[in-house]
Length: 377
Image 1 (cartoon, rainbow, N blue to C red):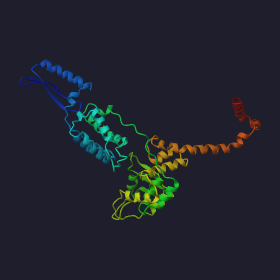
Image 2 (image 1 turned 90 degrees about the horizontal axis):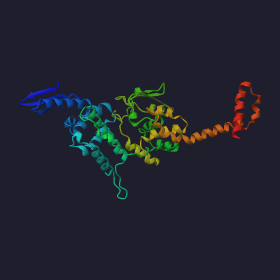
Image 3 (image 1 turned 135 degrees about the vertical axis):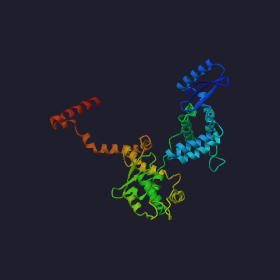
Image 4 (image 1 turned 60 degrees about the horizontal axis):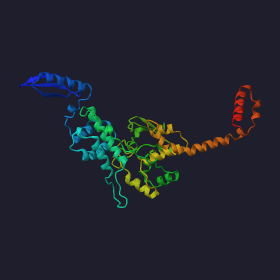
């Protein structure tokens, strides 16, 4: 209960912040002054401007980051392991700072310093540093942490509000041509081949493939049901003959429900070594496992499949993500228009007068054509 208190010759004001935290301030020997200060505090709280009191929550960044990871990230985000590693990086820069000590300026320093840090094996002639897109992902996590600090009553506003991410060019789009697909599959090991086939012919993500269990596959309906997807929604993936045959040939392990597992029944989580070997044997470079998903989408678009259908197959929530493949359809659209033109050649070579035999209800169309040609001439 808020109010003015008198104790040991001094007046105190007692009130609570919007987050429920109780505050007691010593004012002095004047009751009137205490009443005025209390009124001011109530107005500041009501207007959301009471920054000084909120800043007295002395919580270190590293402590709150771990709380964020435990309470929010791990229970709610499939990418919590990525958050875990990014938070380790953030702690190197902001460890020891109270949340309210993190300012837009200190975040800008973090951005610029990260861009100059070396990454991977170094070539003296061409040194590699952290790319701007990587720094942007780290800023996203920092923003999430600070936004939660605001939501949980530890900060009034997030300093990230006035910090901009780096502008980066559109993401790479690397896909295989049909000849390369054949070559890659011919160089896959027995265990790797069905995994690559699923990626190429369903567009499923690596985690979705590794998490497949036999009850997810409906051979009668030619459907794979994914319950645990990136966007958290159930997705049904159609199977073609290549996928169905590949799955039928996978030997079931009696000790697990997972389709892809080792001899002990432990689910497979990493195929980097065998995949890299298959790429080397195929003469394919600069090609990640995720690019198999790009190959699936790219080949569909080039085959004339509309973008919305591709979106549904990929499991994108909106069309924006799928539009990255739209440029691949341009040459095929041109070809389609040319096919239409060839089919209409006979139509356009007809004399306008040849429409005079049409029934009366089509004569209006004939008259419009005549008027159109007259206008064009």
